[in-house]
Length: 112
Image 1 (cartoon, rainbow, N blue to C red):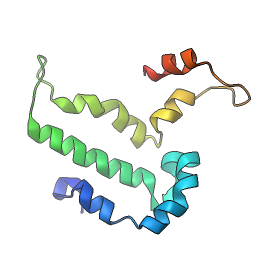
Image 2: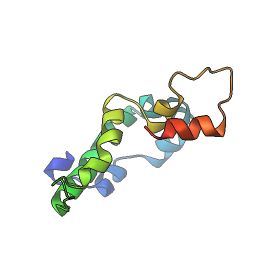
Image 3: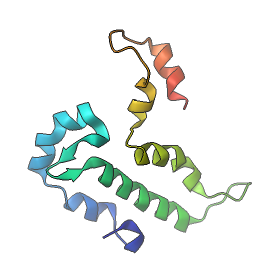
């Protein structure tokens, strides 16, 4: 069931098998949204959770001075997930894998 059809995060969580999730953990850490739990892609789950979150924020209908609701806070994350990336991917993109960035570099990159 899609979030727009009344799905909830609890329903999405119930669809996950704990044993499969534990087995997938190394891949989840290494591959992010490209990982799978069993046969299920994590990007699909992330997109579903964002649909649920966006739906809830839309229903709250709390508007800022420009008339935008709270979904504006999820726009960057939604864009990343739709492109198959996590915030960590965005932060590390273009870094030389043979060197370790400074904390200042990571913080500067975190202000996407």
